Amino acid sequence: MKYPKLRELKEAVKALIKGPYTTKFPYQPHKPFERFRGRPYFHEKDCMGCTACAQVCPPGAIDYTDEIKNGKGKRKLTVHWDICIFCGQCEANCPTGKGIILSQEFDFATTQKREDLKQEIEKDLMLCDGCQEAIVPYDQYLWVAQRLGPLCFSNPSLILI
Ligand code: SF4
Ligand code: SF4
Image (cartoon, rainbow, N blue to C red; front, side, top):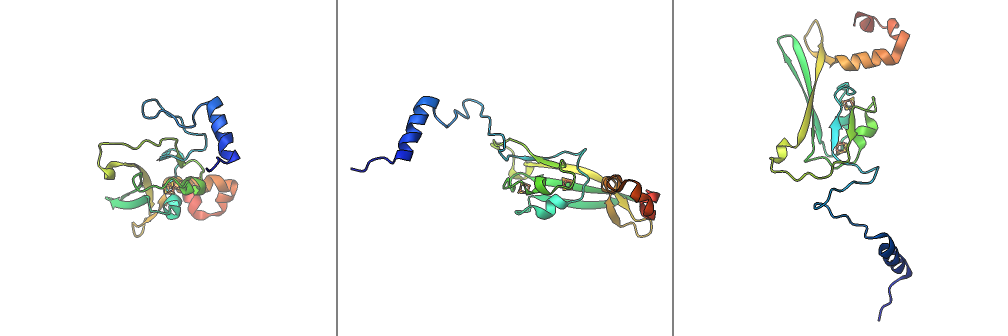
């Protein structure tokens, strides 16, 4: 006969005193642990549209498109929750630190199509006066100017902005 190991016995005694580790979800709400990595959300006010998150996302769950029409440009950023692996790289590498943040949401059960599991935000693009090509989003330019502070007055392009 095989005897249980001491470690297993210790866990069994602990579970008897403290109750089970498992929760009753979905019959009762479940609150994940503090550092749980769930569904990432863009926070539009703190995102400057730089696309760093899209570049570091391992499975390519974040994409963006630039659209230029009638002299106006828009950058659309999309996070696809059906592709996301919840690694947290987007949040860790966001220059503002708050542009995209992983929530504690874990329950993705839905009757929607998987393509609809996404969040989209838009940023106004600064266009070149000469060729009408996209330069960067306005918010990114302003973020850089704020970081530089008075030093931005040494840059003629920033002074124009
Ligand atoms: S500011 Fe952050 S969230 Fe926004 S595009 Fe850049 S890296 Fe992504
Ligand atoms: S958590 Fe990871 S996989 Fe999900 S969007 Fe962010 S970088 Fe991509």
